[in-house]
Length: 201
Image (cartoon, rainbow, N blue to C red; front, side):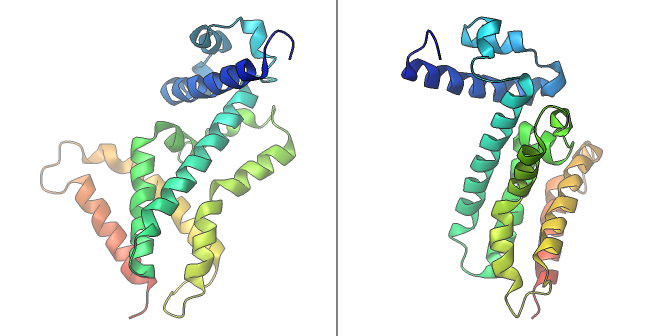
């Protein structure tokens, strides 16, 4: 890439991804401008295209990086669980916590903020991205569904359960101002009921 050393290219690319994560998390894909990204990294707008073909290409890079980090966090969350039942509970707890605290992940999973990529990213890139979305969960789900005590036999069904439960996060706002039943309490009850129901006594 003309004008930049290898170390400079690596640094600028990394700064664009980090800045992109911050901007996309705060404003979403549509409201983030390339000039906002390049101003923060202190490069010319035209220079951006030496690193990414489009804003969508950067967005995809940011989302794939995010998926990797969420996958690592999921693995860490269940690592110390004493048994499969505790693993599943820890997995659900981490999944909910990440959706609540990680605005970018929330936009991706709940709001389906992948749509801006439909026309810009190649079909193979999108297929790979969708496969990776729940890949870390699938690797554990296959192990869980092979247990005699686990009531679900189809890993895809279990992945679907995670996907459906993700939308319960959107109900958090309706709990604001309610004193007798808080969202956190309801969420813990929901996780306990689901986990207990997944395992045969």
